[in-house]
Image 1 (cartoon, rainbow, N blue to C red):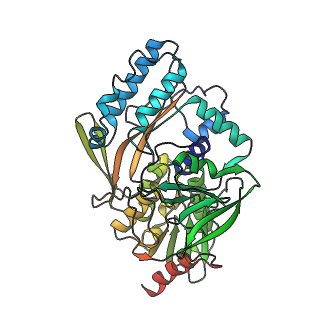
Image 2 (cartoon, rainbow, N blue to C red; image 1 turned 135 degrees about the horizontal axis):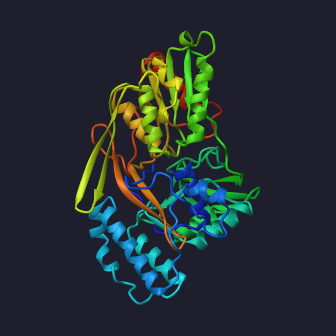
Image 3 (cartoon, rainbow, N blue to C red; image 1 turned 180 degrees about the horizontal axis):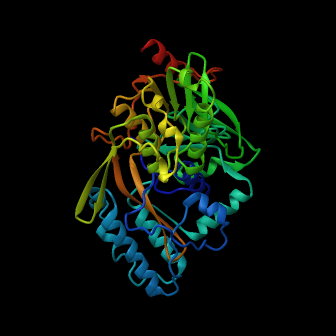
Length: 456
């Protein structure tokens, strides 16, 4: 088990949340029931609207903080909010959360004082999904992105023995397309040893200007190996619905976000409307490799597309002393309604609920992708093929604070249909198969087709 990131560099903040939240980062997110349906938004000064909304979506903007008393009031509000809603009460106790309540009384005189206090308090939980991001960090991340400074596509964790291990590879990034794999041990960057570095320093090394080359030293087959990668603009994956040889319907969703999901449905509908579609395939492969997650409601919708009844997932939320466990059940689609009360013809394709199915996953399949995988496996609908998934089974709430900072709080835990959590350990496929380094063919896809057509 690796240690959680306590701090993240500015560019890593941008990369992490774009990859694991809005794509990734990210991200499985839910809003509390009391959240307004259509919040008003004021973008923090100095941050382009499109980048802000891409990273965090719409948020409530409160009045500006202007006095020391207001600084202190906001600090205490954040402390109370996390106290009441952070999903893991035991973690609050273990972190001695009570010591932070009055830790900065009379000491918050400037915006910078408040930023430092909030960051110190929130980061004490050592939860990568519960984070405070200041306005200045957002501005700096936005500026660097505009200057063409991007991530190489590698996220890492520092283990308790100091070893630095790749934990996530952004799909389509230079790192993802290389011989690197989740779990590889990183040794050096451009000849500079990573030994003894903080997580923030490692993240910073993994950023650079588009076009720049970087040499990564990692452990391969027990020996040090070098690989040269070039920084590139973020890769834009696409949704797919394609008929493959062997009468296989191949479906790919790159992320659980409205636009790619709409494209996913359109791709299926376009194929469905062609003559002979009903008799054109006998098997289905759903490819969720490198899918960083996103909207939980879209994950539920996808589960319902392939399964007509059962449990999709369970969700545990805390509100003070009360802990609620909600069971999300799968219901058949009404014949005339789809997602958001619109006509979605893909939902009427009964063949998607009856043909033998496999799901492809890997170490970069995260959150909502894991919810779908666990649901399809738990309802005996699909065989899971590939490698162990990333292991994110929590959902978080996002809030814009009066000082133009962003507060992200983990508010619930997600569990499989049988009530098991895969958080921090991932989901193990029914059929484990690695994609060989430097392979010229998609070995995992071929294995999924073999499993469907010939059995394990």
